[in-house]
Image 1 (cartoon, rainbow, N blue to C red):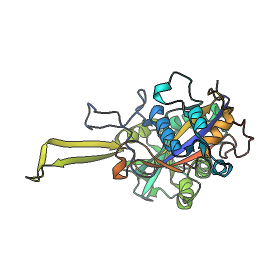
Image 2 (cartoon, one colour; image 1 turned 60 degrees about the horizontal axis):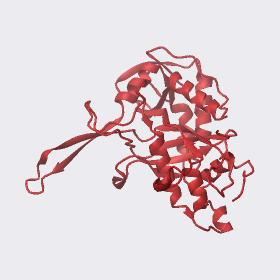
Image 3 (tube, rainbow, N blue to C red; image 1 turned 90 degrees about the vertical axis):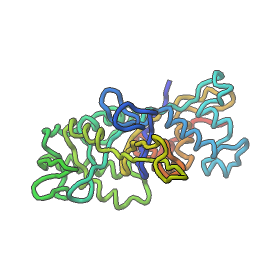
Length: 325
């Protein structure tokens, strides 16, 4: 049973390829997507594995009190949180549970202001549903859905003439719900973007936020991702070797995803941590950035992380640790 919950926001800083293996469509190596909507996701198993790998480097057998204050885990705590090693996987389950990372904001090329963060009432409603599940209260209402050729905006930053032009598509701007669009943008800027080094983007988000009809949003996240072409050259002829020409799909830079995190009491013998303490330990690891997905050696998949609890703070920042080893 989960006794504590929080939210993890993931901001994409270099193209993110969380792949599914060989695809049957136009792209050889597509990204992971929801079956029903086609929205991009990062599956929970890969995300938890990445958190586990990152946390392993912050665990030692006998951390000092100073180490613990700096976010280090004992090896027993690490295993209690993420589960035992494979050879002992049946002994007990880890206390931390992660959901899939779902898309909330997707960057699209704009004729005005370079690019816009687009979303939809469908994506926002899904976020509000999961936010309620983890006890997070954003405090803004879901706007009324715009028409198929309409874009809800706040102000004139995205206007090119009398239209909002995203890629080659033109939308009629609607400012009748500007206050709601602004409130959503300001809340996300304050609570979802990385805490440091993002002043420019925090200031830009409320004016560059654009809420589209759900079908327009779906089409952008389906067909507006980055597709990179790769080749392998024959070292002698300097031509493409055999059929070594392939394409890889990635989530573009400046995408924003969210992940519900849940935790229950430790199941490991000798480790007395409740769910709140588990989330506090994970948030205190100092994981402000990590790498997800493929192509790590070419700098792909760098993401910024932000852990938020129901008060909008880091888990455990206003709570008492639930136990001690």
